[in-house]
Length: 195
Image (cartoon, rainbow, N blue to C red; front, side, top):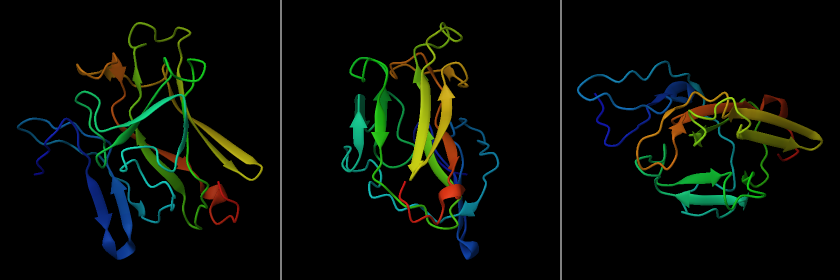
């Protein structure tokens, strides 16, 4: 068994002889019982060398942000899925035009053989459950730009997110919980053009 001190935890699986690694989705411990981590897919652990790193500096050092954005150690009972800090963005007050907040990473090259860009997110909303299906359809998207090619991926929206009620202290009615998303970058892997 694995002891989990906190509201959520991750399970990481590795296969060292082939340099494979995989991580479960965020899991909520089941008190006094087993917590099923589901199927963990192992992939080559080749990583994209981002100049930014993560948010462990406690700020957006190396990133370019706009709108309402901050680096935080927690939001109510929600803890970062990895490390000690996570980024928080909002489309409310302080965002550009009260609609948009962004983060841009420094240019990077995708090494040959890398297939996915992977990150974790938790989509929070006050539109749940009252305004689902209304005009308040906030969107979380990722845009990858390489030379003349732009790939845009909609990660989730208010009207399509698998919301559950958020715990007290989060400041939002609903959340998806931490989820892992994979963006296919195989088309630009090995290119000399930075993304």
